[in-house]
Amino acid sequence: MKNKTIFIAALILCLLIQGCSDPDCTEITWYQDLDGDGLGNPSVSLSACEQPEGFVANSDDDDETGTSSNLLHSAFEEFDTDNFNIFLDGNEVVIESNGWANHISPYWSNTTARNATDPMGNVIVTPAASVNHPLFTEPTITTFEMMAPGNIDDFLGSYTLRIPIQPELATTSSSTGLGPIGMAISGSMIYNDEEGPNIPLDNAVGSLDFTAAHTGPQSYHYHLEPKAWSDDDNKLIGIISDGFFLYGRKCFSSGNYPEDLDESGGHTSITQHSSGEEYHYHIQNNTFLNQFYILFPGDYQGTPNAIQ
Image (cartoon, rainbow, N blue to C red):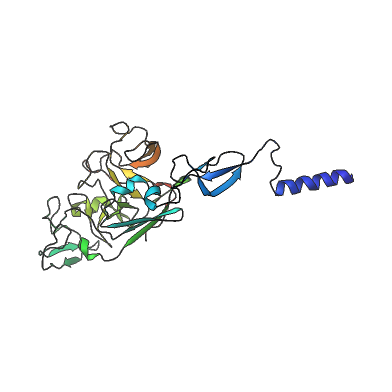
């Protein structure tokens, strides 16, 4: 009985320190491979029997801890450098934006005063500027009377999004909310398919400019396919707050509309910014009001991060 008690105690101690949970296990050292080049970082390692995700067996990477450009996803090269500051902070990518766009719009400041109404029907007057902004253009799809109040360059704040260098799919999806749910490559924000609390986007379509964006409640933002740079193609739209990139309606790997999208418009394939397959979203090729395409009508498939 005494020997049996000693054996059980030793077994419990062994399991607690995880030193003999698998008698066939031979632990080896694995090295972190953040940039996915197959070469490990000699400064970051762990011991395990099986290869952990994101780690390799060698420690031959001289650039793993080098400059941010070596680790940042190549898609970030398309983000407008005048409106964005993108850098690494530990294992996170920090994306800072001034909220402005980089293309023409009637929502830039101009010499014409215009009126709009709030949800209660009250008239809101946007005063005229003394000069036109260089990117101002007359409205075509909308009118001055239907436009939302405020100009792009009225917004003097900023937005910050922090995401993991290597985002992962979550075990369960989560719904988007009002306000920014992503950042477009132009510098402005991406919103979902709602205009406000219990206010469908249908009621605000008339205020959208030619690239399906308008101002309010804080800054200029997109709801629909942004025709300033993407119209029925595979171009990069931006990044959703869960860290996955959003592309146009067509798939780079096939040249056609993808047929394997999940309920959020996501799938795994090669993009123009990756050498291997990776998860990303697409604008879904389903019309809204028989003529538009909503940027992101689904749920987050990753873990959302606040855009502040």
